[in-house]
Amino acid sequence: MNPAEWLYRSAAKMPDAPALHNGTTCTASYGEFANRAGSIALALSDEGVGKGDRVAFYCANRTEYLEALYGAWWIGASVVPINAKLHVKEAAWMIENSGTALVFSDDKSVMQLSPLVDAGVRVVSLTGDEFGAMRGTQSDTVPVAMQKDELAWLFYTSGTTGKPKGVMITCGNILSMTLTYFSDVDEVKTQDAILYAAPMSHGAGLYNFMHVLKGARHVVPESGGFDAEEVLTIAPLIGSVSMFAAPTMVRRLVDEAKAKDLSGRGLRTVVYAGGPMYEADILEAVDQMGPRFVQIYGQGECPMGISALSREEVSDRDHPRWRDRLNSVGTAQSAVLVAIVDEAGNERPRGEVGEIVVKGPTVMKGYWKNPDATSKTLRDGWLWTGDLGRMDDAGYVTLQDRSKDVIISGGANIYPREVEEVLLSHDAVREVAVVGRTDLEWGETVVAFVVCDENRTVTTQVLDLHCLDQIARFKRPKEYLFVSELPKNNYGKVLKTELRDRVNKEVRT
Image (spheres, rainbow, N blue to C red):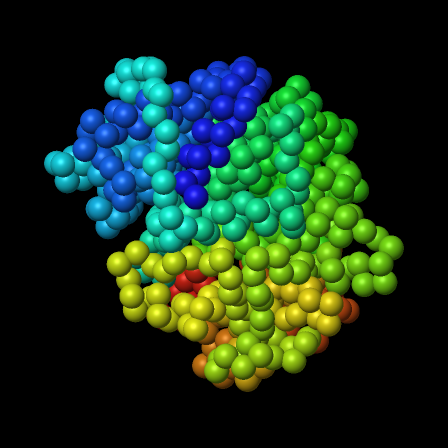
């Protein structure tokens, strides 16, 4: 199934329905959206781009991004979404590695990219006159047929340990992800809207499919990104808004809502994922903004599609085990199998920690031109996620940490998230990240980076007593480092690799 077929169908059924919005201003109906995509497809064909070729996107969120995405799919090309916040040299490497034929960017990046890519790679600005001409003709073409195993979305991982790997997401993967959204995450109706506040190159952009299929509205904030005040202002004006948000974005939304005494009116659903959501934060979010929150767990290799925790479960306070479920990432989504295994691939008993593996039609085809990495990650059809977790008797999966984040001190495993949860329960602590420091005697010792709430302070001694009151002595941090902020990547994830390097620098020297 070619994703462009969904746009073609929605446009045929409801050509006058509002489709694309810049802020509160509608810039295209579904008929206009589809015509622009078809027109771009013709222009790409004239450029020599065809089925199976790659078309890259290196630009901030804008409605033209969607038009060009569907223009590429219209002719059977696959897209290479690149985060606009990445360095231009990082983007150029991905363009070269993917064998991209044409890049859609913006005026600034066109000038920076052009000298760095092969002479045969065209770079077109989505904000320029050339793109205006590409999308401005009449088109009566139909999307080309694509099979379920054909590449549609080539997503490059963040590359925290070496060069990024290109994750091959097929049409079949997208179909599975889209349909399980309706069964396990949320329903979508024509009157609904998706707000792209997080980068469209990542999870937020993947949620376009459900809304195109249902003929719903697509809204890009005027800022082009995430601003908590803007989201809470625009949501009631648009109405029935869904959005994808990293936990750090949820935290900022709640802070803004509390400061302005707002309830989040206009926001229908906030799907959160991409990092640990701490219990204290989601409790406060539901208390302030109500039952609007849904959690999913996925990876680039199984996009948005491993498990889900429904809005009812996130908001429930009556079930005997509601707290345990709130701290989980929910149960397996309908299309996949999820298991917890040991290093040999043997399933672990319920309640015991192991690596999370997943199998099903949402799992990637493999890594682009990287058979070694593919064979290590995909084994007998199972995706080895690198995440550690446990599953209870009801099937709820609770993440512990990435396998590389586990601290081994004196032969005992210490899971940073457990320590972080305890520290965050202190009312003076706003954010925290726990990492291991190399130690000649113990192997590793626990170090906590702590960000205090505004206008609050707390001493090391107080935090130590707070930990000793709730977790075993050997798990408590041996050092607390108070910082103004934690380093994060472009998706809001805390860069623990950077923090580990920081605490181990003196050990190495």
